[in-house]
Length: 331
Image (cartoon, rainbow, N blue to C red; front, side, top):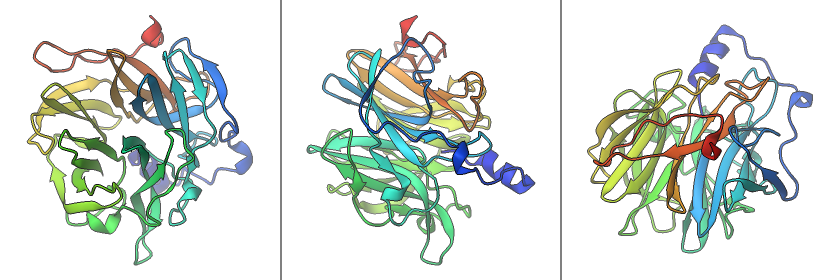
C-alpha cells in the first residue's frame, strides 16, 4: 500500500472521513464469472496492489478493494479471482478482510501475497495495528487456509512484523508494509517487505514466525512494493521507486544478495501516484500484473484497477521494459 500522498494530504487537511454510503459493495457473496477483453481486467469494482499465484493450471489473482469517494485510501477487504486462460475469470466470495485480524485497526487491507507450502496457503498482508506502547503503525500479518480461495483465518493472533521491530533503520511508522515471500530450492522461506527501506528475514518452516535477524536490503531509491521472482539462476527483486512511482528492478545470483540494480522496468501507471507489481510464469509465458487509475471516469490514485501485460527477457537474463497497454494480453 501507498503512504506518501496520503500523508501529504493529511498534513494539508484535505482528507476527511469517507461516509459509509459512499463505499462500493465490498465483494461478491458467491462465485461470479467475468469475461475480460483488455485492461483494466475488472471494471465492476476497484482493485489494487495485485499479487499472483499459479497452482497447477490455474492463475489466482489477489487484490485489495478500493472503496469510498476517491479522496483517500479506504480498503476494508481483499479479493480473489481465478482463471485457467486469463480471459474468463471467477470472482470468489470475500476470502479475507481487515476485521479477520482482531489486532488490526481501520480499513487497511493493504498490499499482500499468498504462497503455498505443504498443502496450506499462507496469506501475508499489510495492515495497521497498535504497538505495545499504544502507538498506531503499519504491520504485517499472516492468515492461513486449506484453499487458495479461502476462507482464511489469522494464523498467529498477533502481527508477524510490527513497527517497533524496525526502528533501528527508520523512525517512521509506515515502513513495515508490502510483504512478498519466496521459498527457495532448499526449502528456506524468505519474507521481504518495506517502505523507504527494504528488509528481509527468514521464515521458520511453520511460515508464521521469523527466524534470525531482520536484515536491510540496499536498493537505489527504494520506495515500496518489493516482489521476488526467479528464472534460471537469477533472482529478481522488483520494487516501486520515486513518487509518483515507477517500477525498478535488481538481479542477483543469491536470494540474500548483493543485488545489482538494472534500471526501470515499468513507467508511471497512468492516473495513479502508486504502482505495484506481481511477476509470474503461467503456461510458458511470463506476466506483469500491476494497477493503474485508468478506470473511466472515476479512476485515480485511490480508485485503482488491476491490469496485466506480458513480460519478456533479454538474452542476458535482464528484463525488457514492460509496455502498458489497454488491449492487455489480447492485443
